[in-house]
Length: 314
Image 1 (cartoon, rainbow, N blue to C red):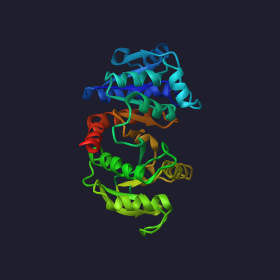
Image 2 (image 1 turned 180 degrees about the vertical axis):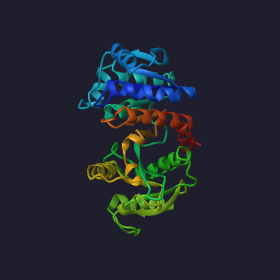
Image 3 (image 1 turned 30 degrees about the horizontal axis):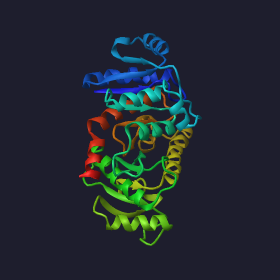
Image 4 (image 1 turned 90 degrees about the vertical axis):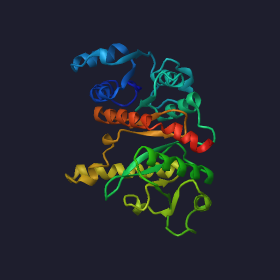
């Protein structure tokens, strides 16, 4: 298996991204995974040598352009053919790599996913997921967390399918419980979109729907998969990350709050596309990059995109 990493993506690239790859390589090599590093080759090699690692442990592909975090995703992806992100998607499309990970421009990663490897037939909109720790142990999945700020009811219904499959085949949850994030538990609560989505989910047969989930239930066992639009999901995710920041600043040492640390899970897969794409936090350090690469391996090994394709097209 080959996994490519965008070395130029993220606030601390290329130093932290390269160091994350060095740390991950030691573990992934034992599992038959080769890391492909995309970016400025001289800079990458200099960091590898300085850190006492071997250049021969990696496949390094030189790129001359970088898509910045503030650039227009569509324009940059099409006008920068030799950027690390564009080259990565080219390799993914040709099947030369089995997964592509980046902590760079999320919009460009979404554009690349749709333009290069494309949506799985039947999927209306791809989405991004994130993990939310449960008090009792384990993690809930929340989706979408930013790719789709506005969603129609049928899109939210499909998020339920995508999240359920991810929970089952990557997190190994048997018969995942799917809930709809809402302002009340009662069926009649919510705005027009959530009311319509609730009816579709209640009548559907594609996943185990358990009804509405209130925000106070995000961290318990009521649901394993929590569905919402990307606008709401992104706000929830940032609030959850703030819990960890506040706890650290106040010197609170607690196992539960430590599980909010984004470094531990590294990134989020884009679901609903014909390959394996993982998006990391822009502020990712070496530890987070390592976690993102390990997640990439797990998603690729689970053959998640093939499972989703089968679910939508059989």
